[in-house]
Image (cartoon, rainbow, N blue to C red):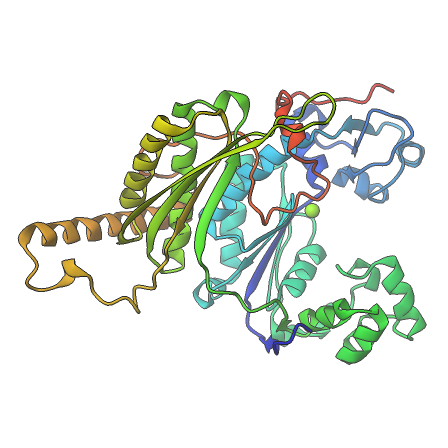
Length: 451
Ligand SMILES: [Mg+2]
C-alpha cells in the first residue's frame, strides 16, 4: 500500500450512488416516445458502431451492454438507436449533483453517473432512510424515468457492490456483520475491479467463486492482480479504507464553465452567487469557519483554425473577513469581489470560480475582539448580527436537506446551465470543453439514427 496502515471498519461509512443505464435513461427522460422501449445509445450515426448504453427494456430482453448494432437488431429488431448527446448529459449531471448535494455532500464524483459520499456516524445511523431521502429528492426533481441504485456499506467498494447488486432502482445496505455471507451469490465478473483479465488470473489461481475470493490473503490478491490494486481491492472488500488519509481541508470551492449567453456581468453575478452558497454549505458541514473568499475568472484560450491557441487570460480577487460561516457574510464578500471585477476584468470570462479559504476550526480559535466582555456596544451588535446569520444559514441548510434544494434559499435562485470545472469530476466518456463551446443541444432534441 502507500505506507499508511488502513483502518478497518464494520460500520456503515460510505454511500455509493449509480444511475441505471444512465445515457439510455437520460434519453428516455427527455423524450417520452422512448420510454418503456428498448433503446440503444450509440456514439455516432453509423450502422457499424457499438452501443455505449442500452435501456433496461433492452437488458430485460437479454441484450448485453456493449452490443453492436447488428447484434442488437438480431435480438431486438424494433430497437431504437439514438446518438449520444454529451453536452446534454453533462448538464443533466450538473443538475443531479446539485440535488444530491442538497441531501448529502459528495466526496468524489466517480463518473458522469456515479458518486460516493462519506457518511458521518449520524448520517449512517439514518440507515436506508438516508438513501430513500436522496431517491425522493431525485424523483421530485427528475420524475420516475431516471432511476439510480444506492448502496450503503462500510467501504466504497462494498457500497458500490451493494448498489450494483440491487439494480435497477435499488437501495441496499450491507453491514459489516453480513460479510461475507450476503455476497456469496455474486459472480466474480460482476464485481467492480474484476476485469476479464483479472477473472482469468483468478481462475488460474484456483479462485472460482466469491467464497474463494474472500479466502485470499492480501498478499495473494496483490500477486494475482500483479500490482497494488489487488491489495486495495482486498482492503475494500474486507472493510478497510485504503484511501490516503484525508488531508486537512484547506478550501471549499466551486467553478463553472459559462455558456455564451452566461458571460455577462449580471449572469456571472447570478452564477457565482450559487457557487458561493454551495461552498458555504460545505464550510458549515465541515464545522469550520472561513476568513477569505477568492473570486476568479478565466477567458481567452481560443483555438484558432490551425490549432494555435490564444493566451489564457486570468483574473482573481481576494476578500478577507473575520471568521465566518454564514451566507450573508460570504455573499457580501462576493459582492465586493464582483464590484472589483467590473472595474478591472478586461476580457470575456468563460469560466468563473468561487473559493472559500483561510479556514479555521472554531474549537481551536480563541475568541476575537468582538467576544471580549468589555467590547463596545457596536462590536457586540456586530457579533449578535453575525450569530443571527449563522443560525439562519444553518436553518436553511436543514430545510433544504429535508425538503429539497429548491425549497428555500437566501435571495433568488436560478438554474445555471454549463459544465462543472471541478477537478474531481471524472467525465469518463464525456468529451472535453471544446464540445461545450459549440451551440448547446436542447434537452429534448433527440438525435435519432438515420439508418
Ligand atoms: Mg450507471
